[in-house]
Structure formats: structure tokens, C-alpha cells
Length: 351
Length: 280
Image (cartoon, chains in turn purple, cyan):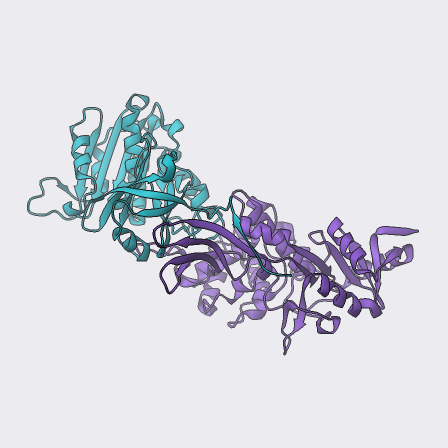
């Protein structure tokens, strides 16, 4: 018996598959960048790809919402004509972990909400996603089991799971099936392969355990009671307001809009650039009033944007458990520790 | 595998051309711009909404609309020269072209106000967005009950729209009072905080709605005074200032806890924001 939702790729064909795909599409995948650092970059062969990688420095949001993106071009001279533009390219992302797929799902919701953001949505339409399952924890910073992002839950075209000497591949979309057909190398999955996948997932349950002594369902309630918690005071003293945590977050999407003119002073362009709510001027208005002046207010805002505010608007958490904010914090602010402290102090914290 | 570039017809960031019909110097730092969209396109705003204004080469900023939708063919924005874009705007002349996106946000809930008394409290530049409500109300005067307008600003030379204020004073169908924080030798009016004007207003709490706009510092004392007069919390309508960058609920700059000022506001009733610690 065969299952046409699943295919098999023997590992000896992996390299040929990547070479073939990279000829058909621009292909980006995790690449080792030295001391425990990885980045999604364009690759042309399987050897370049780090199959066993911890979350990349920047999440794949950089392809969906480029760090610097032109939104509008205009004339400064007589005509003053302006046109909204987008620059994009078709591409294939290989090796996206389930936490980062969850991050893309969050961004999809934000930018599809009316009024839609055409720039984001056009990037999205042109990027195909091939996921890759984590067989074990990346490191001690992850909290993907708490967030339930350790298992695949849609949001990809194809999804690879490493089962030893072969990958079992879930075909989730028509586009995914076309990749399989155009590339070759794949075989249909047999029932024995599916059984192996099922037992792998069963084993995974024992490997991935809730990283925190709290049920996910109780987190919104925890945050409802934690607005005035002393935990934010502690973060106030430690945070350097560098903005690393938001830059590396797969679901942080705040941006600034700026104008730039050419040296002839004839044409201008308006672009968006990643911004961070952790930076001091972010919530400042013209008279100089700053609505989140203190670092504790800005850190608190970041945590509420992950664990409380999106629950009402999008019915989901905006933390994917990837651990990047903790990994990149120069002051050693660790998300799991912050949550633990909130759990520990919830009784005394009254909103 | 190559970068493609296309023009978007339905981008949220597209701008329309706005022709500056006239510019009026209101005070030393504030000017009023009368703007018409190119091609005679109708500009349909709710009082209290804002537009994103582009000065070509300088940038884009949020500015509240100062005119009533009952205007035909043009709208007004009142701008204080404060930063890069507003200073660039002040250098423009009648006949120049700017870019317009919007109007955006939720303005004053006119349908809810109809048939009720209004207490409009404007402090300083807060008169700019409230002028849009005031003019709307005067153009539809019979749809409203008693109208009270209280205005306060720093000193007599900061008074915006002095000619219009004189007209309001002369009208029989409106109660108008004003005060300044610091008088000048020739100032004959009141001197004192805006809160000192509230006891002079006859308020029937159940049928009075308050529209309050001013700098953040005035909100708490004014609201306290209104609550002591038994005005229901949801009858107190406040416009909050934030520096919107996108205007469409994405960029995060105007976020107040779980609300986006650009989309859920800028006009809120006190009941819906009183629990928000970062509101004022």
C-alpha cells in the first residue's frame, strides 16, 4: 500500500536533489557560519547545507519582509508622480524548522489582515517552503514544546523528516507535489515508512517535554496578572535596549518608514526598514512625550506582544519557542527565566 | 531567478496628489493648509480622523484633519512646525503639491452624539482635530442638543483660529469659554487651567457627551473633573496622539497595549482605555 501524501528520499540522493532544485529556483537553506551560528543563504549544492542546525541568526522573515524594502518611488521635480512598487523574486526555502514555519504563519495573519500589505503578500506568494523536522532540541534556549511548535502543523509545501538513511516527505500542497515531480529522486512512501514516522513521533513525545512548569492555556491569565510585576523591574536593570531580541524574533514585524532622495534631487523613494520597540524613540511623539520611556515598559511590551495581545486579535501566541531572543541577548535576559519568574511571583503581582 | 519589479495599484502605501489651495499663518508656529485632491476627488472624512501627509523628499507624517466632511472639494490640516517634515511643509506655497494617504482611523461617533448635548474641550493644538467636529456640528446644528466649547492654551498669541472663535462667541446656540495659562497685558479674558472652566458648564450627565483633545498632561485632571460631575465614562471621548508610521495597523509605533491608535482610534471613549497603563 502506498500513500500519495508522503514520499521518500534516500539520503544518497539528497545532494543531487539540492543541485537540481537550485537550477530550477533560487534556493535558500541553513548554512554554517562559524561558531554555532547559522544563516539562511542561497545554496547550489547539498554539501553547503547544514542539516543539523540550531535556529539561524535571523529567521526566514527576512525573505518575506526584507530588512530594507522600497514601498514607493516618486518624482521631486514638476510632476510629483508617485508609484507604489515591489521588488521580489521567486524562491524556495529549504530546511525551515517548525518554529520558524509557525513564525511565518503569524506574520501571514498580520499582513493579510485588512488593510492588506501587498508587499508582504507578494513575497509570500513567491516563496515555497520546505520544512525540516527537529529530531532533538537545538539547545537549552528553546521552548517549542510549551508553544506546541515542535511538531509540523501546516504552513509548508513539503516537510522533511530525517528517519536515518532516508527522509520521509509530507506533501502538503500542489506546489509541493510539483517540486517532487520536477526534481525526480523521490519514491512513494510505503506503509512501513509511515509506521516508522509514527514511532519516531511517539519517541519525540518523550524527548520534548514542556520546558516550563505552566500550561500554555494559563499563560494569558498569568500575563493578565503580571502587568505590574517586579519581574519587569529586574529586566529594566539588565536590558541594554539594543534591539537584538526583536530583530531576531520570527514574529516581530515593527517597522519604520523613511524617505531617501537621490543626489540629483530629482527622485525620491520611500522604504520601510525593520524597527524595534526596544529602542528608546520608538513610542515618542512630536512634543517629546515618550509613551514607553523606561526599558522595563519596552521589555514588558515585547513579552505582551508575544503572550497576551495577539490572543485577542489572532487567537494564537506570537512566541514560537525558537529561543533566538535568549540566545542573542547580550545582557543574558532569557525568555524561559522571565516566564519562570512571572509564574513564581504571580501571587504578589496585582494588575 | 531574477528580481522582478512591479507597480502596485492597490498598495496601502500609495499616495494621492493633494494640491495646496491656500496657506494661512495662524500663529508663529502653526499654519493652516487648505488641500484639494487631484482630479476633484471627494475627500470623505469623519471628524477626528487623520491623514498621512507626504512632503516629497522630506517624508510622511500623520496629521489630523481640521475640516468638516460637510466641506465640498477640499479639506484642511493645521500643522505646527516641529520636526523635519512639518518644517518642510511650512516652506511650501499655495500651488505646491503634497501626497495624501487616508483618511485613517476611527473619528468621533457622530451618530451616537446626535440628539445629545456636547461639551467640546480643546487644549492648545487639540483645537485642530476638534475644529472638524465643531464645524460639522455647526453645519448640522439642529441634529444636536446644547453645545458647549471650552478652549485653553498657553498664552493669547497661541490662540488658533481667533476669527472663528470670535464667531463662536457671537452665536446664540453655543456656550463658549476660553482661558490662557499666562495672560499678556492686553488680555482681558480668563487666566487659569482648563479645568477651571468646567464648573461653569451646565451638564446633564445622561445626555452629555464630551470630546476632549489636548496634550497628554491635561487628560487626567479634566477627566477627573468630568467624572465628579457624573459624566459616564463612555461619554468621554478622547483623541490620543501617537506617531503613526504606516497608518494601517502594522508598523507598531502607535500601539497602546493591545490597541492600535491608528486603527482602533485615534478617538477612544474613556471606558475602553482607562485600564490601559500606557494610554496617557
